[in-house]
Length: 125
Image (cartoon, rainbow, N blue to C red; front, side, top):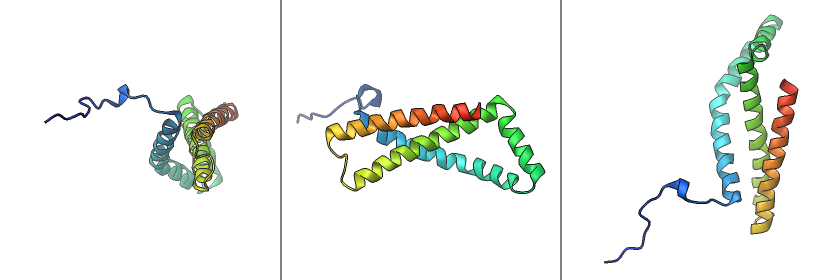
C-alpha cells in the first residue's frame, strides 16, 4: 500500500503567505495581550489609590529603560492587534477577501502597526 503523505512536518520548511502570517501574528498578539493583562491591571489598581501612588507607578514604568521597553512593547502589541482586528472585521463584512486585496490589506496592517509602534516609541522616549 502506497501512502503519499509528508514525512517531515517541520513548519520552518513551509512558506506561508503574507495573509496567513498576518492572521497568525494577530492570534499571537492576542495571547500576549492576555498575558500582559494582569500586569497592566495591577499597575492601574496601584495608580488609582492616590496621587502619590500614581507618581510611584509612573516612576516605576518611566523611570528606567526596562519599564519603558515594557510599556512600548505593550503599546506596540496593542496597536498591531487593533489594526489586524479591524482587518478581520472588514473581512467579516465580505470585503478584502480576494488574494490581491487580502495581501494588500495585510501589508497595510504591517505598515500601519509599524508606524504606530514607532510613534509609541517616540512618545515614550
